Length: 385
Ligand SMILES: [Zn+2]
Image 1 (tube, helix red, strand yellow):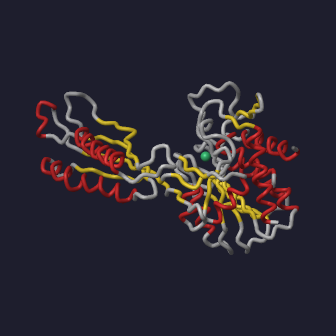
Image 2 (spheres, protein in one colour):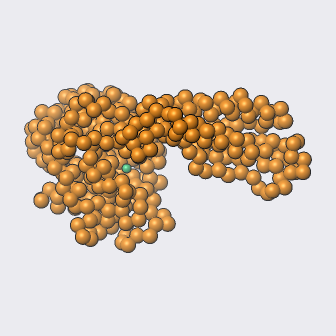
């Protein structure tokens, strides 16, 4: 119980920092560093290029022995336009629930890990526990990439990574991969009464969007299946489009953004290649026949690899034991776990709270979820002692 109280106090401090991804996370980082200093734990910063944000890497136990990573991000999504019943940056308790931005996603997990640090430090750990605390997860898993690059030079490769995104402490071994792109279609303008003399950027964008949709329908119809997902196949989606100024002008510019979310059986790169090939081989020759300057430009927006950890992996076996569950699942949302796995560190997503509460007004985490998470971390300490 003392541990639960400590988790809540730490969560209160963490929620108090407005670490919306657009802001610096350094005030929060300094708070964590002060705390780790007081626990006598070594840590280092892995900053971004601008010096306004940083990851934190901390190791408790022998650094040259393969150990376990507990990983979480510090940033949160904006509260703009949301209607909250209480100040989102002031942790508020009602009916066994703790309300605040990031309470579930995912400062609650960080609070449980930090609350256990004094115990980790007091025990003679034979295998180390590392804390991997990142920035800019919510805007494309950006910060953790620097931390993972840094890990490649570490004295020992960790055995497993537990990413504490909210799963209700369920053991999640898979999520889809994502690729998203921005497309700029450049046409040639003219008066709409002379339409064939122009290159209508909106129409060419529309043809490309239909192509993307066709790919999505092909996967829905006959693509590979993974029954552990709510939507058990690879999906395609266009989410944003803008172009044109007036009906009597042939538009010379149109921009849109699309994404693929792939299950492990499918390769996002091949799907993007198919879209680009359609633009280059079918659309651009027609466009350029009217105007040399017309064309289609693709720009990578963001993406992350999917997660597909084998059920037989040691990391999965241990996560099940620590979480006290025999069940495994896969989730629709992306996490940093795919990047850890890509770097050769077997990874599992397991964390307190529910994704249903994340990103919304009145985000909360139940105190009972924090207790479950603390029990998980305590068993990990036991395992490493
Ligand atoms: Zn998250």
